[in-house]
Amino acid sequence: MSVQRTVLHVDDDPEFLELSERLFDRAATFETLTAPTAEDGLRLLETHEVDCIISDFVVSREGKPFISAARDVAVDVPIILFTGKEWDLVSNDALSANVTEYVQKAGIEEIEVVKSRAEEFVAVKAGSFDNITADRADASSDAAMSFALSPTTLDEEWELVAHHEWTSSEELGTTVLEAIEEYTGEDPAEFAPLFEAIDADALEELLSPSVSGTEREGVQVRFPYKGHELAVTSDGDIAIRSLQ
Image (cartoon, rainbow, N blue to C red):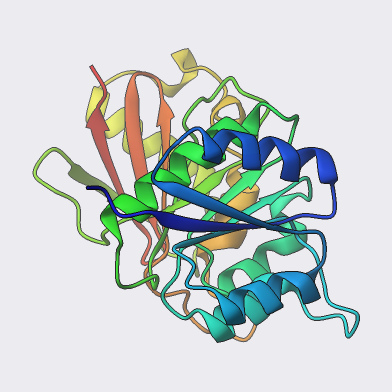
């Protein structure tokens, strides 16, 4: 007999809560708890054993983001930040709360993606959320980056092809293109524009040391480009593997 798991969805949009409840209820192994406010979400979190948290960027009456308050209570529970807010507006709070994944709302169809991610996280039941990996699953999609738990090490399929020095004047996007040229032997002028796969400026902001000079340890971003998948780390390493 399978063990029933519990997912908590916090959102001030009743349409998303209703749809989420219907989707998870189709899976006999899930019980769905929903809350329209941060306060309601915290009460449920403190009175129920929850296996995964899905939350829009809602804040309490005191102004504290729910994801931060939830992480204080549930230190090892996966948190999926599912919000219409751009990454640069929530990144500091998301990273501070060690969110397991970020999915940007573009419509109600993304709830299917969120449901799938929640099921995966519950299945693996990982015990550490220190390392965040970004994965743009579809470069042609209008959806923003999604961030998922991943090991910091890369297996033998990956080839380390370049290293970016954060203190250099060269832009990260240029280093990435040079890495692809090194790996493929092709002229970057023949490549599709890099911005179609990733926002290089946002990528650099995410991975580079903070203004105070503090390194962002263990952050890794992956994205597909030109038939390959690239991994860029906060250490400045750039690795690549074929998707074919």
